[in-house]
Length: 265
Image 1: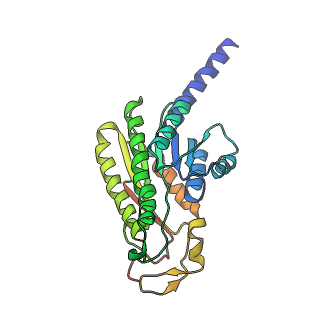
Image 2 (image 1 turned 45 degrees about the vertical axis):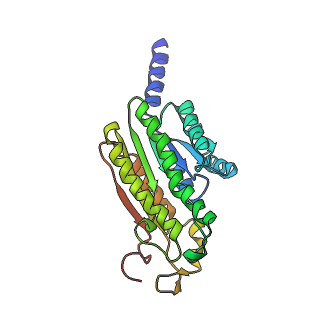
Image 3 (image 1 turned 45 degrees about the horizontal axis):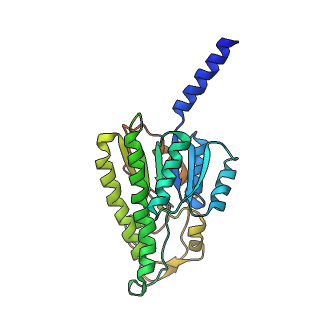
C-alpha cells in the first residue's frame, strides 16, 4: 500500500512538472475566450485576464470551473495591474509558459482628421502599449524561472499588413505590434524566449458581426464579407503554443478564404 501511495505521489509530481501555464488577455469574449478554452482542453492551466470580471467568469464556467483556470481582472494599460496579473500567475502556478497577447479595441471608422486625441490614445494604449507591458512582465518571469524560457504570441491582425478605410489608430498600432514581435523574438533568443504573431481576418465573433450587414470597402462600396468559425483561430493558437521552444511560427495568417484581402479591391 505504501508503495502504491509513493507511486501516486510521484505521478502527481510528474503531472505538475508537465503542466503548462498560459496567460490569455482579453479572455472574456471572442477570440480570447475561444483561445483560452482551446488551451484548457489541450491541457494548459489558463489565467484569464480582462477588464470585465463577469465575462471572465463566464469563460471559466465554460471550462467547467476547472482548478486549471484562474480569473484575474486586469487593465492592460495599467503597469500596476499588469504586474499584479503576472505576480498572481507565478504565485498560483509557479511559472509561465505561454502568453497570448490578445486584448484589443478599435476606434470609430471616421476620417483621420476627425479622430480625437483621446480616441487615438485609447487604441494605442490597449493595442500596442498593453502588448508591450504584458510582454515585458512575461519576459521577466520567463528569464527568472527554471527552466528558463517560454513563448509569447501577439495578436496582430490583417491590418498589420493592409488597412481598412478609416482605421488609422488600429492599423498603426497593429503595425507597431509587428515591430515589437520581431524585437522580442530577437532579444529573447539568448534566454529561450520565442515570440510569434498571429494575424487574423474575419473570425466570427461579436466584433465582426457587422460584416454580415456590409462594411465599407477600399473602392467606396459597402459589401457583406464572409467570416470563418473562430475555432479555427483557437486551433492555430494551440498549435503555435504547443511547439517545442526550438521551433517557432514567427508569423501566421488565418483568414476567411473569400474575404477581400488578397488582390485589389
